[in-house]
Image 1 (cartoon, rainbow, N blue to C red):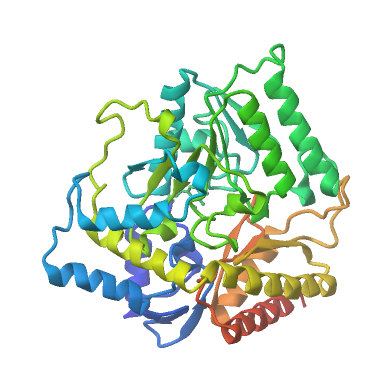
Image 2: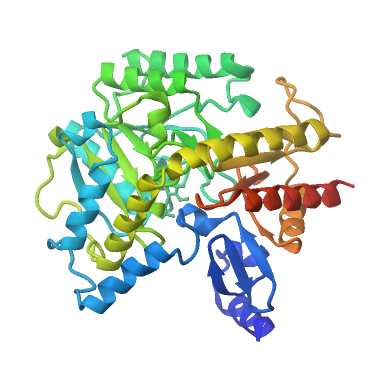
Length: 441
Ligand code: PMP
């Protein structure tokens, strides 16, 4: 049965499919962070629906919220008409916002994908400022629609730069291991901030003031690169100085994943516009943009979209958010993430094939390199895509689902659900170590 399903989907699905190519499994049951395949094998899931499943698969709280909606005969879909579920979701979400944003915040429900909420944010900033250009970062990933691609920054096959670039000023993201400015450690981050400061301040620099700056507080698809707090604060200061709305894309980092409910909180930064999706729907599609009230210049219908009122996602999202805050899962992500990162650091010391390990909370990345290769000016080794693919496959063989990310698809990403237990974390690390050992022997 399983072989037949895989064969038919290989034959019929587009060449653009990605995960299905190397995760040769047919999941038929799942609970928590465990997924069972049609062949009876079980896997620990460190992909979590690309970060959507904060509570793992089929968490009773999420399932109960869905069942309640279904059993109550609520309308399933209501465009942007008011519903009790939308009200409850909005209240729960606003309670998580930094007070300085919550005071005046407005929310726009979007077609339920991160990329549409990014489009909404970019459009809003353009309308509010009357300007067109955008400031964005190397290695960024914001989605697959044309505006989102324009501000993305060359992440392996996912977002090749150029196609739709338009008027985008691309600034260096602080990525110490492969600093685009060729400077090591903190110096690279300082230089990246200074570069942005000078470029955006200089009227002769050839940069027309942009309509917005968009950034990820921790780059996800770009290879799990946490921005230093000082750099984030510098971006906040520069944008405030020049009246440029700051858009924080927290599609992947939001809802506690990085150890605080929103990753901007680490730096005490309050964005003007917050983009959220993935985990906010509790596993179901939902995407929103939340922004300072004075930016709300939109005409009615300025950002429409059919699926903006999906009752199930609102209810599941509200329940999930409630569970995360009540059970302090962000704090849990912070403490467990710190311990897992330390363990990965130990691995780095043992394996020359690990160039760097990074992470914040339960968003962790291991960058694989070729130890025989020529080091660059920073002493960093060349990316090893073949090794990364081998490790991913070896993980799957050992019952561990991981994905790759990064500029060269050589960063193994661990995105476990926030409900991962200490024992499960231990097993994840054991299986990953085994896979690494087998692939580098
Ligand atoms: N922004 C970020 C930071 C993301 O990680 C992603 C998805 N990986 C997106 C936007 C796009 O979201 P979606 O795939 O739901 O369109």
